[in-house]
Image (tube, rainbow, N blue to C red):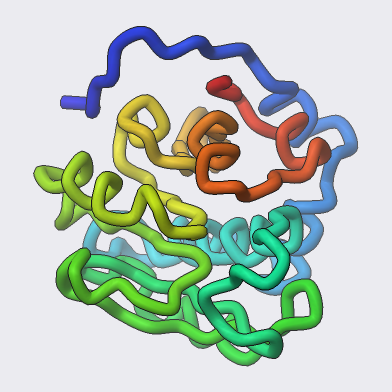
Length: 199
């Protein structure tokens, strides 16, 4: 069952057409990072390849988000990517550790509970936390944290970016209102690539 949140205004982004027709800045980064698509054995929560691509998308998202000046929770030289719950990425994260986004080195940390979330710029909420998503989002709503997940209905529940598997490809929805309330600025380029944008 997808998460639900009533009375949300949604507008379509350019979505899959943009992904196919030329806005390849995200996909080019993903393919450069991971190489050509490959068939792989299944991993917990999805295929190995699926989470390689999702990790690459998240890495590229970091390049199109502005955190408030002087209010970043990491350090001027690092950008912290946190995973809350059971990690579905596995070794895929090894490919982004130490890389740079907006001149800051990517650091990966793991959290078991939302109360542990500190010094985090981007937070991925795993499938294992599905029953606690609303509680988690409330717990970080006053922080300058970009929240990302692949749970159904994540943006409708108040998350900022939802990764969605659609027609054998990965697309994403953006809750621009949630990002604005956290004083995060998402690039118009990224908004144009989204399948749907929640205002």
